Image 1 (cartoon, rainbow, N blue to C red):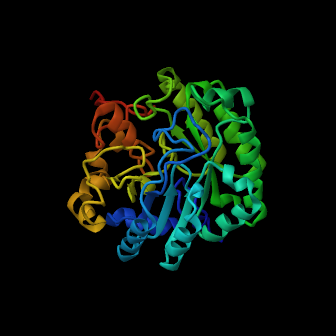
Image 2 (cartoon, rainbow, N blue to C red; image 1 turned 60 degrees about the vertical axis):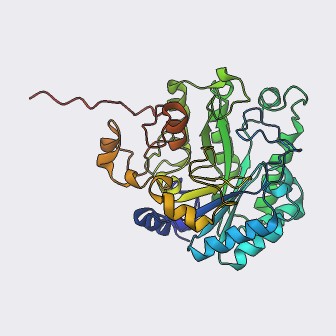
Image 3 (cartoon, rainbow, N blue to C red; image 1 turned 90 degrees about the vertical axis):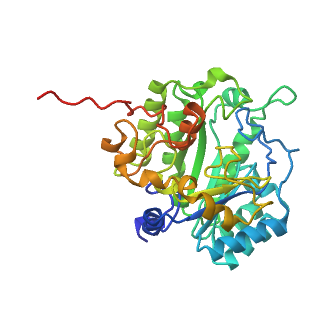
Length: 362
């Protein structure tokens, strides 16, 4: 196999990486994310969707199949199944099979808890052929897990740690290449004293699995403690560690959790039908698929939806156009949206960013 056959080699979060770059350069959509349910068993205190085991499922199966048909017609290559936890839907397997039969590749973002069932793990491996599986485990420290999960009416359940680890082992035993897996961490200040870095190292050394490091934001994660927002120094420390452990031979994607080739080729449909450029940019400016066809909405708003102006480094803000990382990074668009009020603004959480370029004296 070539390196590009592994979804996470370049933080591109997709196999066929060279094809993904072609889609990026051509302004095409490579991945359609579908938030198939808001239900999730993990009770993350920082969840941007406020997911619980009792949250609504969202769109019905026929509507989702309609979106899959459109994706195939638009030559989209992959489906990211999001939640909540998409594996709690009773028809998750049917929907993934439907996508596969259309020639689409399935990527599944799960809490990891359902994978503790070996039969479930086997089915997930089957339908993600050519795609990846993402689990979500911030820490293996039970006390810290309790702090990050639970809430007023629910106590954090440390046994989930063992369930998720068991799920990862089940997936690997079922034949999934570890390069086709990723573990997602939401980076909060409780993890900044070293636990996030320890988890990145643990997942790489124990399972050969890379980490998707997502920044906590007090606006996005409105249900959590605002003091959990990490400082830029803490962000730099954690993301540099990710680069060193996971991508020692590849360019950095900065304080983004994925590369610009992923962000610039993905769109998302929320559980209630809103078209958004990123699963955490919760806006209604791009329209709703329950009111207009997906292909119509894309055509109307493609330039801003796919950040097409960010293809030209000369149009990037501040020193971004001259940054050594801009071959893989254009700053996190969700940070720009929530901190600066515009998805095309600078990313204030990037530790490389300076707003003005100082000219050298003659």
